[in-house]
Image (cartoon, rainbow, N blue to C red; front, side):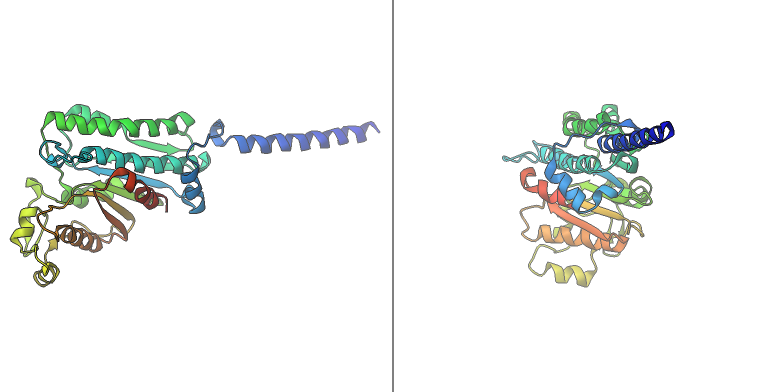
Amino acid sequence: MKLYNIQKNLTRFTAVMAIVMLFSYCKSDVSGNEELEIDDFALIEVAEKTNTGNQDLNVSFLLDLSDRIDPKKYPNPTMDFYERDAAYIQSVSDAFYSHLRSKKVRLMNDKIQVFFDPEPLNSNINDMSAALKYSFTRKTTTIDKIEQVKKTYSTTPIEIYKLAIEDSKYIGSDTWKFFKSKARDYCMEENHRNILVVLTDGYIYHENSKFKEENKSTYITPKTIRANGLNTSKWEEKFNDNKYGFIPATKGLDNLEVLVLGINPDNKNPYEEDVIRKYWSEWFDAMGVQKYEIKTAGLPTNMDKVIKDFILK
């Protein structure tokens, strides 16, 4: 009888422990982290429905700190372009944050970072960009670190732009060279969904990467568009006949998704935006990019959903 009671009690104890362990598992994940509190229900629901919570994200930004961000040279009565850039970055980071919140810690292997090419001369800007680099694994992820991403990306990018404007040393952005020499090494990880977000007005020019091969080049400016006669209703016919476009910087970028934000065409040419899109889209096709979107500099409130849909779907 005593043996029976012992066995009975052991059975009950085992059942209770199983329930406790199950409850604890639901409340916390590997590494002893507490349950993540959910603030952004809508975005997390999107992440769960589209299985992005099971993907490993590797999100990169390429910021163009040329004089395009100068509020005096290119004023906008509605919202300055550098402020739009910072808001776009926050929308991307919010989507990344929601992805993390929908994912179990034991599955974490996600990254987010910011790049410039060339690097800014201001060391403070470089320090700030270093602070925007985060890597999450099951061993390094904590609730505080996840919350820190949201906080840092909501404040630091705007400070970077303000410092660049205050310095007035606009070094430009060597976008073509970045794709040629760094995109593969910096922005692509195996077994990840690699996303590069390019903040630019759509024009590419840097004195250190100015080359031409017949009618293809490494740059595009309003001046070159006019010089090539791509400012009439027959611009596309002329573009195709003369084989204009960017020189492919590299190949094999099939595992890289690119989101271009901030396109700001010269309003003197009604076909400028179409020409810019043609240059970029053919360039991405030639380099093997399978998924990309090219968006104009709309108001952040209108762009927020567009950006988050790209990241989470």
